[in-house]
Image (cartoon, rainbow, N blue to C red; front, side):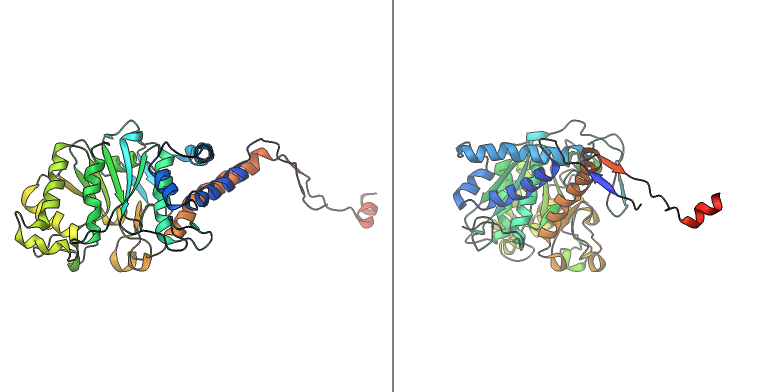
Length: 374
């Protein structure tokens, strides 16, 4: 008889299959509301219809069921990524307790995102063929929900006299009025591992109470340096800590392109690399020179992606930034962030929730074998 597996019907009230299906549908549901509804929702408005509030609660339960068992300890000595590379903590971890709502994950953009399939369009985000910007923003929202951080999306009016990339700087300053830590990400920057907490990352990068701003280093290329050969930092991923010193740094940063202290900084209101040149080439070099004022994290860990590593040397092992050949890969990354946790959970559910009766394979007995045995 050949092997056979008899699966009994699942009797649990809340199966993982239902939960995951609801998770995916909930993200699509969120993005398919009208512009005003979604905008209020991501800002955490208390004036939501009852149906929305019920769904938000259910979504939190789904996310907790899927990700909580896999959340990495914030004081774990190491973390191994999906390529086998091991990242270690150095010394005693500074962050030993979860920061929760003291952290704000911040998105800020001037684009309306109302084109077909985009986050605030009438029809909402589509699946499949998901809009890349929307997928990136939803991944930030997911990360905040998993770890209990606050989340805010700010949609600004377009600047008339500065590049739109500057919009993040005043928004970070405003957010620091209400939160101890503000993490800003461009829409094409994503946490690679959603169950790896910010606290562990900050411990790994030796962030402490003296660190004002922490940013990803740029690839070590001549075009990423100022006239003195100083390597720029990438503002697509910023960790800002609330302190008087941080506010002073940001004030100087915003004053730089006004030419108040540095006339040569005026051009970076419009000229690339905009706020990156102002921060590193002027503010960091001439005013805030303490090592803890403006720090970088390795490009290999917090910039670039597998699609750019060969040419630029930065794989984005822990935080991905999807520029150049990595452009528009946000939907793929978001799929990984869901399916990478769904599949192990689904398999575990299959093994534990379904009873399996396995009949051993037995060789048939032939008439010839019967004669021999006699």
